[in-house]
Length: 298
Ligand code: NCD
Image (cartoon, rainbow, N blue to C red; front, side, top):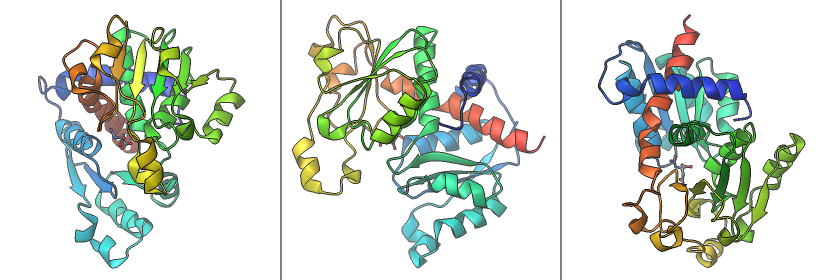
């Protein structure tokens, strides 16, 4: 997200809104015909992988996939750098998800096709952020002026790291709500402060829930805890349900998957924006792919 300026974000959001009809299959596009997207997912993924694949296909392109690591040369000990080098000669852009922070940045230095970070460990998840912003803008017609709370595992959650950087480019009130053990990393806070970006921190949702326009909820990232005992102690630390939200004027977002942090009774309420958020992945990722792939061949 640090590579982006506000104009870049606004450009993608604008492009995405023009692609809604193609995303919903109401119109056709062959714009990326003959182009191939490489999907390198070393960590589990449902929405991100499938929405990149759908987006590429809706634009007339195709995908190749590393698939299950145990079924590829990864099982023989091939490094991610070698695998990416090979993918480079097979496709026009690469989407990578890996548990190593900074891996996509590293690959972008050694590979000549565009590299899209689809999640690097506890680092960042910038394309998720773009669809999050798209969802907010679509609902409110703006991002500036809103009061936004990021709730949950702010330590290991990569979506909230990217989102904090991006929201820092807008005129928003930003509050980080988490148990003390799962606060936003010092490095991220330091970056925000360096850029004069204001934020608040609290461990109590009650402090903010009456004032927020957007409540962005995240899952506790069990797989990133070095010690499973630590996870066991903190799991279930917060949970949003219909009763808690009653009378509040806000939307609830979540990158998904959820575990127990949003009760199912919220699904049928007007607070629920998380499924629409997942659907918005298509026009936004279409806009990203189209710009990265076609500009390369201009
Ligand atoms: C997120 C991720 O992988 O970081 N999922 C997603 O891409 N929508 C969130 C998570 O796993 O909690």
